[in-house]
Image (cartoon, rainbow, N blue to C red):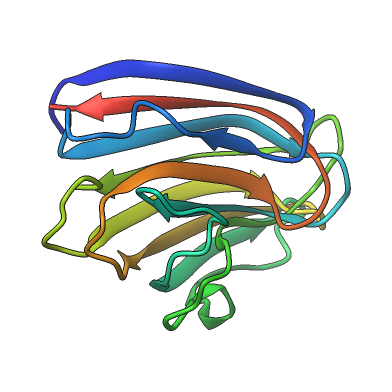
Length: 178
């Protein structure tokens, strides 16, 4: 990893989404989104993201992705590392899950990092990968690993983060990596 430069910090307080609509440009070939203390207002909610191509709206670009997860129950009753096809998209336009079934208790939240590569390219699709960990609503520590690509050669200049349903609290920082 290269040198990281903080571009923006966005704070959600019972917000429906955080939409970053500036600063995602050709300055850097890689952008990193650090998400901390992401806590849904409602129990068992997935934390997600989606993007817009330049001059587009609706946060509905086509995504292909793959997912695996590691989990460990708080009471030590079960643990596993497994492929998680329910989180995959195959040329889908929905928001991509980053962390699933997050609990809304005061001791529950998720945190993680999303990397997005060459968003300003008008030649290639845009690759991404993420690593998140959260306390699942059933007292399970869940690590989600997601990777894929946004299937457009148009430049990406906006990104949106939200729960699959309901509001959330948390902080998202955008960094440029050089």
